[in-house]
Image 1 (cartoon, rainbow, N blue to C red):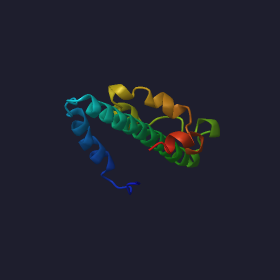
Image 2 (cartoon, rainbow, N blue to C red):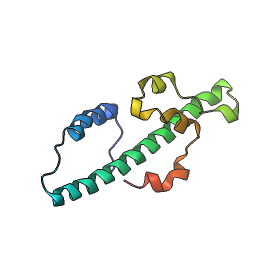
Image 3 (cartoon, helix red, strand yellow):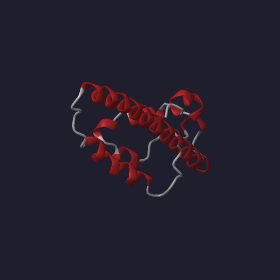
Image 4 (cartoon, rainbow, N blue to C red):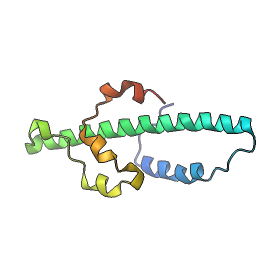
Length: 114
């Protein structure tokens, strides 16, 4: 299921964090196995979404850098100040991931994991 883009997407995602963080452990083995399976799927979906967002950000930066005369090999490589300042401690790898130059075409398996 694809969610249509919108201005409030980040707020919607942020609103889900307490829901997942507040889940109490399962009370049976079967329930624990089912939950682990779902959480693994959620983790894969999050990785795919992050890869799509990173590729989109790179494309946006590329489009912004081109008219400013940034050399081709440097275009889209610098993360924005907002991205670095807003990164959570668990996302410290994102700026490096961003500089690698991820493209949606090269991440087909990850992008379709969800």
